[in-house]
Length: 245
Length: 261
Image 1 (cartoon, one colour):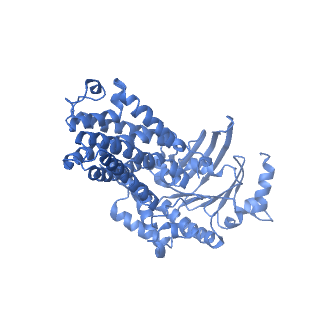
Image 2 (cartoon, helix red, strand yellow):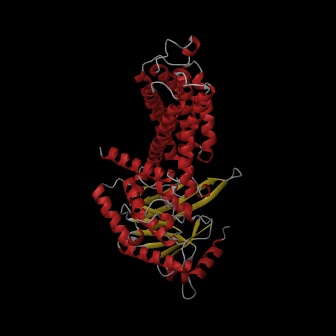
Image 3 (cartoon, rainbow over the protein chains, first blue to last red):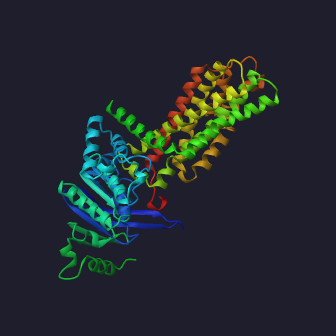
């Protein structure tokens, strides 16, 4: 469903030089699978996700969602992908219902289907009690749920989340990850970036560790951790062994 | 047909967002000030001239104050931050990852900007006409109402370009565009002024006020003798070209994560 192959993304640096944010990253996420993209700040996680979300164009390589290429068919990718970022960007003055309805309009959903979809999401995301309250008066967890709802409004088969729990407390993060597990059970492919390893250690099916713009380890928890230790130990070992800055 | 309906729906969705954002006490207060400003000036001039303003003199003042000053300022405030606001509020990624989201952002912000500024301009016009105590106010309101709409449509499209090319410096760039394009190139009696909104506004003013035969020969050089429909069509074509360019440019823009927030 989600496929990244030999992805390279360079930026022009402030000093006129080139910043190699992503340098040959490859991985895939299948339907009904939740994959954790792990890495420290500046490892290239956000850039990789943004190329997938068609916000950035790759310097080389490819990013595909549901068979659509992010460069040659960005509209196809956008129809098949929901994107959630750490900064919810939820307009304070609109209610969750209005936000979901507006984004349904942005996707061109016709009226009866749109209203039904919005109601379903409000129920599924546990927003019924605050659906008509301005978003500025919602908790961080509720705002992030609205953000997830906004990403799901067009019922995409793939979901990409960039550090979705970074602004949430433990309970909010746990609730959100439970919700993602439900979405995975519905058959969606979920790619989730984070550097809070303990939150997703036992929730993701596989992990891709990225460091210095390169994949330095990938596999299931059992494959990465081996006989002893935990995911954090495996992460540090992978990063230390990578030999890239 | 479905594509057109989808474009209209997404444009209206973004316009709804933008109008909701504009309905804050601070913005509404600013708009009220914008409405009052021409009335205060016209009232002061009326007091200074001890009596109702002479119709043509009042019309010149109204022209300078409403379709030019008030509309220009309103459009600068509402159209210029089209992209910068999204980047700053973290909403850019959510709009840009929708099919047609970038196009809807340009068109929806344009629509919201035109609706908001036209409302402010019409309010300023009504108050100005009353404060100036002008004769035949109905005719003036019709003429200047038309000019307000033309000014808003043309210039909102003009400011869409700096908004997408230089989002972080759109306001400064738009002021530069207004000065260089509208008030410098627009007054050159050459082909270049055909692509300016200011030429169309002046020409419509002269047509609608029936000043053609009364203005000095030198001033005729900076108005276009073509009929009203040509002036209106020129603004529509200009706005269409500018908005299309803005959409194409925004569709290709990439903003690294460091440029957000």
